[in-house]
Length: 134
Image (cartoon, rainbow, N blue to C red; front, side, top):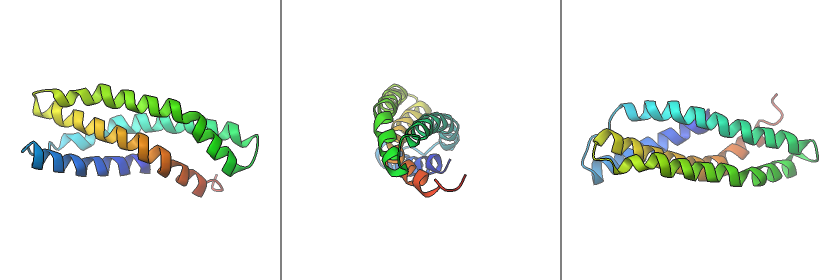
C-alpha cells in the first residue's frame, strides 16, 4: 500500500504542475481519489504476482539471489502490463474534456512511475526489509 501512496502523491504533484502551468486549468479534486481506487487494485495484482514469484524462488536458494531472480523473471510481464495500461488509459489525455484529460495524464504518469520506479526499486527494497517479519 505504501508504494501506491508514494505513486499517488508524486502523480498528484506532477499533475498539479502540468495542469496549472501548462494547461492553465485547476486540478480536479476527484483525480487522486480515482487514482487511489484504480492503483490500489493494480498494485495489489502486481504485488501478488511478484510475491508469488519471490516465494517460488526462495525455495531454491538464498533470499537475495531469489529476490533478484524473481524480479528479473517477472519484470517483462509487469513492465509490459504497465506500459500497455499507461498507453491505453493515458489516451484519455487527448480528450477535449478537462476531467478526462487530467485523468488520462494522471493514469499515464502514475502507471509509468509505478512501473519504472515503485516496482523496480521501492518494492524489492520493502520486501528485503520486511522479509523477517511474517
